[in-house]
Image 1 (cartoon, protein in one colour):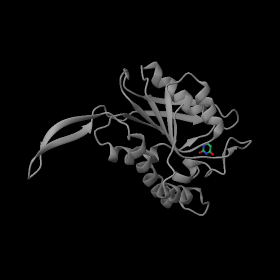
Image 2 (spheres, rainbow, N blue to C red; image 1 turned 90 degrees about the vertical axis):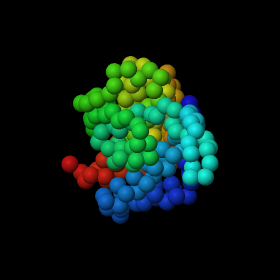
Image 3 (cartoon, helix red, strand yellow; image 1 turned 30 degrees about the vertical axis):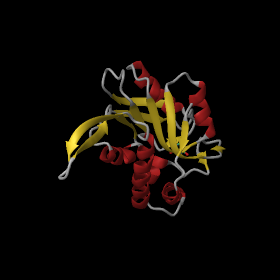
Length: 207
Ligand code: URA
């Protein structure tokens, strides 16, 4: 499985802001938004482009656009904090939504929303979820996408745990991962260490 770690100094700086327990929700969301731009930028590095002629005020030249823009799929709720910025960088993208709640006892994902196109064959899909922890939610989401024909899925995560990467690696799912860091491990409560805590709570406050 292809795992791309975006370790640009600016990405490290935004991630450090997110990790810092003193960072309030507004600053956390701002750092997540900026980091999302960098992750999407890297995720589209090898995207197919269509070439068409354009005219500058001076001459005719080649113009470029994404040949096959990805479907953006934020996983609610934490992935919502990445959606607007991903869309800002790829305004021509469509957006679908998957809602998964984590059962805090079993740590298993429980779906409550699937708002997606019926046919995803031939379409790249970017799944937006800040935390790849056990990999359960991500694997569940990718399975939902694969059932609709998706065969080119990119998981865009601010942080990944080795356990989650291993789970995706061992699955037969068509996925690559773009992340700002592969952290040390999961703790007994399923949190990434050193991590940043509960991403949804940090973004929106604990509810
Ligand atoms: N989800 C989070 O929000 N944080 C973790 O550390 C693990 C899963």
